[in-house]
Image (cartoon, rainbow, N blue to C red):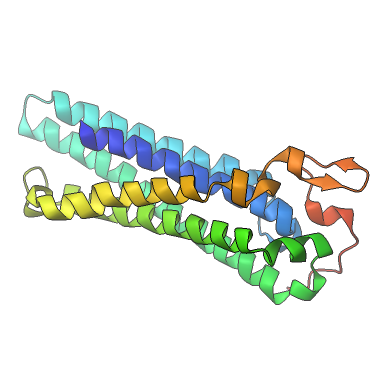
Length: 218
């Protein structure tokens, strides 16, 4: 039961990371992104919810099973959900890395607003916390795959030290990274009220649209 609560927590932390990329794209320049900014929320949080449903369904089936075969079916469903979550995390990382590489390669074309934001210490700390949270979420998910792949009662599942470090500690680090380096303090542009143009509030509009950017060279 505790693992199921941890799975829910992990999914919500992952959703927070997914949501942030949308606002990074809006702030630094959507022309560097392979996808429209709003798609990141719909695609990745949707995948996260699907993963959570699979894990909850599998955990419920395994917990209520009255035979080993039924318990194994539940475990396999849970394992599928976690594997799906890892695949989603890796795809997200690939798109995020692609976005930042394209933004760096075309840094000369970025608006003055985007350049100013990127040069702040707060923004660098925010990205550091975000990457740390992502890595701990990924490590925890990979551990869960190893934990469930061997079936109930396997040596990995019975190793308390590994469980504490790779399960509990990873969640604590992710929580601290997302809380201590909260975007409300370190990335206020994530709030529509903070994303302003000379003539007013932009809201969901791309910050880069306040100026005339050069064509994307990538």
